[in-house]
Length: 366
Image (cartoon, rainbow, N blue to C red; front, side):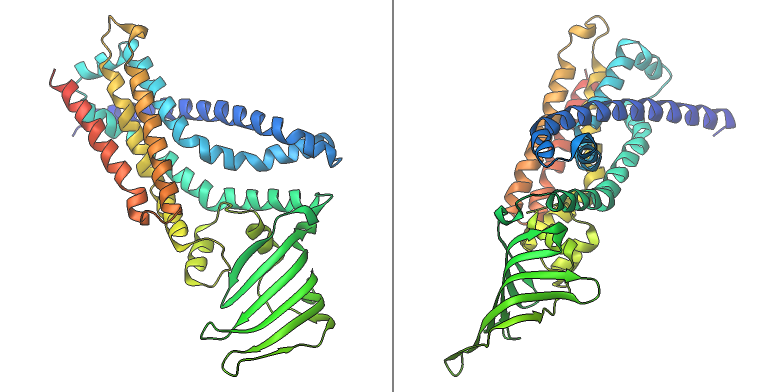
C-alpha cells in the first residue's frame, strides 16, 4: 500500500469520524437539554419550597446531567448516524465514495472507531461519573429535606444480618427506627435489636440510641428480653453514603460496587440477577452502539431523485427505537428474575444485527 493511499484513508477516517462525532454530540446536547427542562419542571417547586433558590436549581441540574447524558447516548448515536449518512447521500458524497471503490462494509469500518469511542465513553460515564453524581444528588436532596421522617423504609442484607431502616436524614448521618436481625453463621436468628435512632460521627462511627432487644435461642426454644440501653455502638462497616444509596432504590452503581455486592462484601437490596444483568449491559454498550450504527446504514441507498421524500430514514429510526425498546423490555424481565442475565442482554443484539445485515444485503443485490 502506497503512502498516498495511507494518507487518503487517514483523511477519510478523520472526516467521517469527525462528522459522526459532531452530529452525535449535537443530538446529545439537544436531548439532554429537553430532558433537563422536563426534570426541572417537576422539581423546581420542591426545590423552591426548600428555600434553595436559583442556586439549588442550578445544583440539581448540574448533578443530573451525567445520568441524562448516559440515557440519551444510544438515541443520540442513532439520530446522529442517520443525519450524517442522509446528508452525505443527498449531497452525492456517498455516490462519489462508491465511485472511488468504497463498499458499504468499508464505510461501516471507517465509522466503527468513532462509534467504539462513544461506547467506551458511555461505559466510563455509567461506571464512574454517573454513580458519583447520583450519589451526590441523593445526599444533597436528603440533607435539604425538611421532613425526612416521611421517607420510605427499606431492608437490606449486611453479611448474615438483616436490617431495616425507617428513614434516612442529614445526608445519611442520622437514621430513624433501626431494626437489626442478627443471624449466626448457620443463618439462624439469634438476636433482635431495635433502636429509635442512630447517629454517625467520624470519631466514633455509628451509635444506636434508645435500644431494646431480644436474645433468641432457637435450639433451647428460649427468648430473653435484653436490658434497655440509652445508647450502644453499632458494629457495622456501612457509612452514610451507603445508606443514601440503599434508600435511593436502584441508583447507578460502579462495577466495583456491583462485584462487591455479588460477593457479599457490600450491603445490597438487589437480586443477583439484577446486578449481573446491569453489569453485562454496561460492558455491552459499545456493541449496542455498533448495532444502532448498522441499523442506520440503509439510508445510503436513498435514490438520488427521491431526496428528502424518502421514508427510509423514518424506517431506520423506527427500527432503532424498536431495538432500544426491546433491549429495555428484556432488561426489565432480567431484573425481575424472569430471564437469566445473558438472555436478557445478548439476544436483542444478535437479532437486530442479523436483521440489519439482511436489509443491507438485499439493497446490495438490487
